[in-house]
Image 1: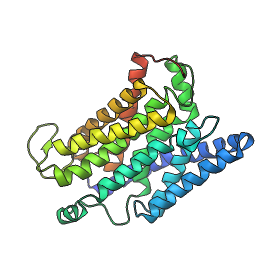
Image 2 (image 1 turned 60 degrees about the vertical axis):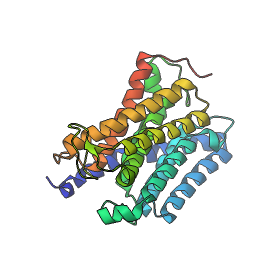
Image 3 (image 1 turned 45 degrees about the vertical axis):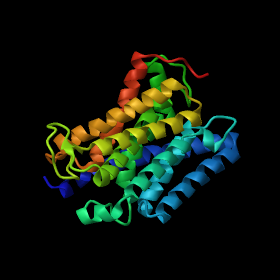
Image 4 (image 1 turned 90 degrees about the horizontal axis):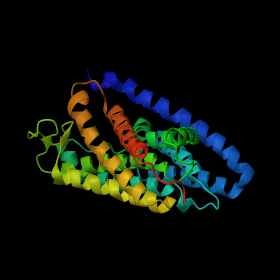
Length: 294
């Protein structure tokens, strides 16, 4: 099956993420308007500004910028807490993801273009943004957070420790892009994860030492940013980072198997990989119950 025939998977990811997050933004905005007009304006304004900057920087198409703005607003509303400060919300790890991935994408662009592996000049599409950031927004929604709080017998909090699950998904999103983009430039001849045999750069499921190390580092940067912004502790940092690294290798496994066989496209792989990172963190929370919010 050709990749073009798998375009429905990208549309499915977008349809799964965007309506949910858009509804969440509308509902949360109405709730916050009644309590704090200033906080609502900050969240909506900064999310829109971030989307606009991404479009102006050609990091994404207009549709991708709008999708990113909606997801960012959803994540900010999910982590907003009085007294409100935008720097104590999910805006900080989202910014970390954007800076890391944009920098990695632009690094060594001339070489990537010669190899035919460079991202298009118009940047990412809406489905790509949803595939990378959508899981974090879905699991950070109050409905999912309340369900996890009940499931894991953890006192509910918009911040700690349940945002660990969403933070792991964001960490994986950064790790995947950074490892792929840097590995193409500095990694040399990569190897296939499932066989450890050398393959050409850009092969689905291929990994390199340089790419893997930079991906692990990127996951750590996002986890640190999110933990500091939300006042988390060592557990949030460790579990979200570990989840991001787990998702990074799960991404390569899917690439080496289902994607190479033409069963999944890249957007589906990215969505499932961020979901695996969130799942890893959720399982860790279930097995290692943490204290409630401090």
